[in-house]
Length: 108
Length: 108
Length: 108
Length: 108
Image (cartoon, rainbow over all chains, first blue to last red; front, side, top):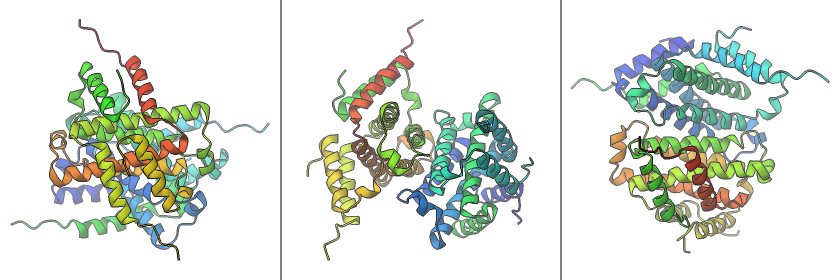
């Protein structure tokens, strides 16, 4: 099963959940809870690090962080499927809003 | 600026941050904080809803949720760039681990 | 209405919620969501600060942080009431467990 | 060591941290991260429960939730010590603001 794009990842996750009879648990509210829980698990790796230490994560710790980030992505993709939201399109629209909110300051 | 894939989104975000002199703030620790904060803002939309209500988000509320999800994705992508982590590859590896941890139960 | 202790605070919060017909929203699950959302709002004040800057919060920012911390406490107290949990007693038991988990290292 | 009030709990936590040479890690930013991480661990217990199931937590699960709530309180108290914030006083002020923001609706 290919997961080279967010769309393919969404399909793979849908099959994964269906095969385990999980969709009944996957109300958007519950997926938003699970995503937040995973964000906390990601943050846990950084809580006692200095900023500099966080820039130099290596080896085992970097892989652990990568897998926590994957968890966040997996729930984000499942939530987007549940709500029929196109994640990359939403990201595009948010970047336009951010560009308006935080204009580049002209040189003095 | 195209953002049709996570790679292109990562490049667009990098340019956006560079133009505003933000990379000095973007230590992985800080990006993990910001991602968690955005996850909380996403969850806020669901906190008093029933599961059923969360399945029927519409109109203004659904768009607000889409933009919060975009914020989570934007920080997730920036964190992956900062740490040199391939998000889709990490997601793939996590799905393999999940399949081992939660095998499909055979029919009785 | 006095709020000189957690018990009195719990009573005041109960009256506050009753007067607004809010108990129907206050399932423990929803209170746990709300608590997490408030934790995120608290963290938002710190996300781009250095550790040193976070030690020197003053004036308006310190008061804003105090009110976010209050929000976390208000939901924590409401959750403890909803579940019949004695917060200070739970804290006492947790400290005993922590003392076992993290013994003081003897001098070399 | 008595922990019958938040003040006594704060003192006990301060001694606990001092004995382990932890104050150097306890910048307010880091404590806010740790508090948010613990809030996520608390939420994890509820993420797949219905609201009704969350009202009927019992036995082992209720004790696990109590200890996660204790963790949130322990970091909240340590953060209040680090910033010199009186938690109960902040809660009192927040309740006054909430009463203004959400007035009791008069009967029609």
